[in-house]
Every structure is written in structure tokens, then in C-alpha cells.
Length: 130
Image (cartoon, rainbow, N blue to C red; front, side, top):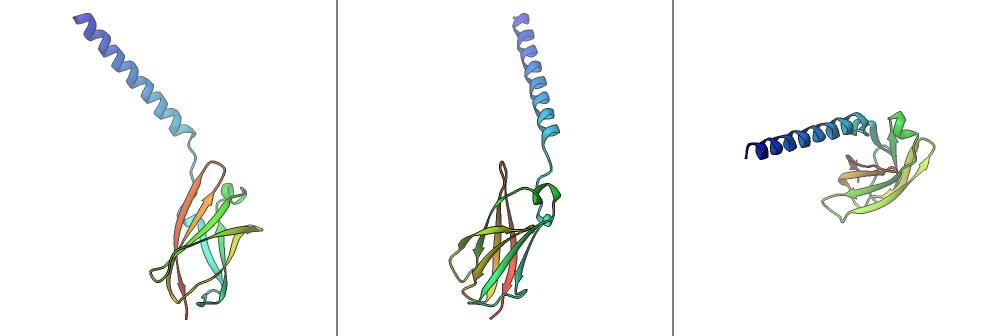
């Protein structure tokens, strides 16, 4: 019986050491991802008007991610209308998309950015004028 308890303890210690090694390995190889403050949303005109085409502009202020190509989609939500999902295209160092907001009001534009092995989503507020 004492030998069995000793073997069980050694097994638990070995498992704990393996888990510790795995956790340490994962922590050292992980990189800082893209954060909310590094992604901005702007529009042309600066104050978009309802039922008029606006250019939505997404800019990434992170040197690692701004140099990489991403698939960018804009999910446009408001309390007054159904959500829309539109694709953005890269133009130089920004991503752009044309959109006509159906009505005036507050909108939440969720920026979905798909890189090779990562996905980021950032919700930004946008006010649309009459």
C-alpha cells in the first residue's frame, strides 16, 4: 500500500511539472495582439448623412498588423434597422467601404479583421445625421 501511494504522488508531481512546462511554453511564444485603440473608424463626409453614400475608413495603427493583408468586414447595426455586413477593400494603408445609412441615428459598426491565424472584432460608434 505505501508503494502505491508513493507511485500516485509521483504521477501527480510529474503531471504538475508537465502542465507547468506547457503553460510556460505557451506564455513565452504568445504575441501581443491587435488592441481596440490601434484600430480607428472614420467616414467621409466626417458626419455621414442618412440615405447618402458615405465612405467608411478603417485604419490600423500597429506596425505588425498594418503591414499584413487582412480580410475586413464591417457589420453595421442600429436599433432602427436590420444589420448589414459589407466587405472593405484595402486602399494604401487603410481599408474602405461605401455604405448608405438607411436613417439618421446612432450606429454600432463592428470591424471584423481576419488575418492568417487571427480574428479581431472591434465595435465603434458612429452618428448619422438627417
